[in-house]
Structures are given as C-alpha cells and as structure tokens.
Length: 358
Ligand SMILES: *Cc1c(COP(=O)(O)O)cnc(C)c1O
Image 1 (cartoon, rainbow, N blue to C red):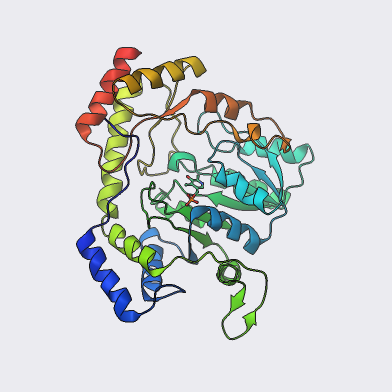
Image 2: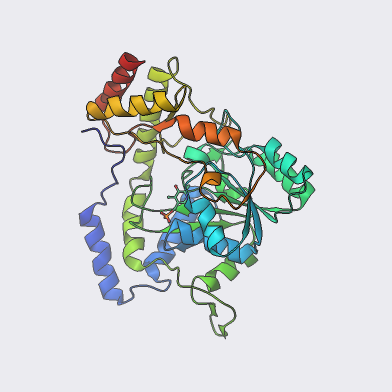
C-alpha cells in the first residue's frame, strides 16, 4: 500500500543518549535543559525570536489567543478544525471570510469586504494552507487600516520563508504543530512565535498555571508545557530536517511536473520556497474527486479529501461573510501520499494511475 502519511521515525540510538541525559539530570519537565536547547536550536534554524514550545498545536493557538487577547475572530473557513475550535473553546465570537480560489488562503479582498460590511473582529485567524504562505503583506496592510491583530496558523509551514525571511515572522503570533504526522515532530508538541516579547512572557506564564517566577500566580493559566522526552525527540529529528525538507520538496516538484496539465494545483506564493508538507490537487467537482479517491484506493493508494467540510458547515452559528470558494475547494480537494518514507517510484506510480484515470 502507498500510505498517505507516515511519521518520521526518530533515531533511537541518538534518542536513547538524550533520554539517559534526562535521567542524569533528574529533570523531566518544566523548562528543563533539553527544552532550552530545543528552543534555541529551533529559533536558530527557523530564523525567529520569541519561540515558546507548547504541548501541542491546538494549545499553541489557545495560548496565543489568551496572550494577545482575542474576543472575536474573523477566520479562514478552509483549514483543519482546530484552527477555529481553539478559539470557540474560549468562547470567542466567530465570523468567516472567504479564501482566494487560486491559493486557497484567506483572501485579503474578502477580509476587506467583511470589515466594510461591519465586521468588528479584533483578530484575524489565517492558515498558511499546505505550507503555502498567505498574502501576508496584503493582510498586514488591512490589519493596520482596520485595527485588528493577526494570528497565523503555521502548522503546515515549517521551514517556509518569504524571500529568505521566515513566514513565522509575520503577524502578531504564528503557531506550529509538532504532531507525529507533521514534517517536524516531537510526537505531540507545538510552538508559538510572538512578534512582541511581552506577549511571549505572558504566554510563558499561561502555559505554566499562570505562575511567574519569583512572583507566584499572576493570572489564570493552564498546563501546556512540552516535556523533556518530547524535547529529546525534537532534538533528534531536527538533525534530519534539512534532508527531509529537501526530499519532500523533490517529491512535491515531481508530482507537480507529472500532474500540472491534468489537474488544478493551488497557486504557490511566488516568493516562497516549498516544504512538501502536502500534495493537494483540485478536481473538477465532488463526484470526480470521490471517484478518483475510490479508484486510487482500489490500486492500494491512499488519498484524503482534506480539508472537508468548509468550517462554516461545522460552526453554523457563526457569522458568514461569504465562503463560496472555500465550499467549492473543500468539495474538490484531494491530498495525495506525501511523507519522508515515500519513494520516487511510488510518486511515479500515483502519477501514472491518475493519468490513466483522467
Ligand atoms: C495539525 C494541525 C493543528 C493541530 O495541531 P495539534 O498539534 O495536532 O494539536 C492545527 N492546525 C493545523 C492547520 C494543523 O495542521
């Protein structure tokens, strides 16, 4: 079978060494030495400051929301459910704007229309879908004009840069997931990159029960800390990340070359590199998408209609400023196998099968 995804397997020899170190330290969680080391290495590798590790990508969104202070959000409807449920969980009011039909990212035009029609959301929540950066310049301009903050769900965008600058440096906060199924993982884990140090410091308290060193409890917090075992997995996996990103990008280009004349591919940001996080294709309509998924499945090739449904179909009591492009994309999108264990010949096989069907 050609699997849709297959997690990176941490090098156990290296991992064991680090776990022995944890035992020697006798320090298993609460901002230990490996936690500190992983933070420093990630900041260096990604080219960011103010990176706070969390226990997963969903808590990263929730903690970012608390730290920068959100009450009402205008969100993209085309993302993983956690992008929005993280904010609903803390009772933020929710509205949706639409995506751009070519990039599948939140459309600045649609955001502009929403505010023109009276949207009062204090925070925009946008996802760099499949690792493809949003129009960060366009959205940034709108945020200044309409006085809203921006949180980017960057869970797919590990290693992505815009003209050499990390995409995580845009917005008031960007969140990452280090779940086992992601490009870089700590089994479960995540991180927030804050623009402002004050928000980083607030978030550091929030993930530790609201406790500030030497002052005790200074606010309402939660427990969202990454532990030393997870940090050890992260350090081991980070050693391999360059090879993984390079290989996945190679697979991505191979797919694009083989498919660009027979299916629609999301339009990639012209100034961004690729990370091969996903391999999305757009089919003509819902029935073609399903029949192709079915035929691939008969050939032992996994695929997934991801993201589906458009999130306004789940959060039906939200305000909707028009989500036509998102609904259409969610019905036609299909993600093909993409992971670090995938072989080039498997990609060729998937391409061949798709060319035969189409
Ligand atoms: C994986 C993912 C999340 C959730 O991250 P977890 O670490 O699984 O909590 C949120 N948003 C997007 C876009 C994701 O892909």
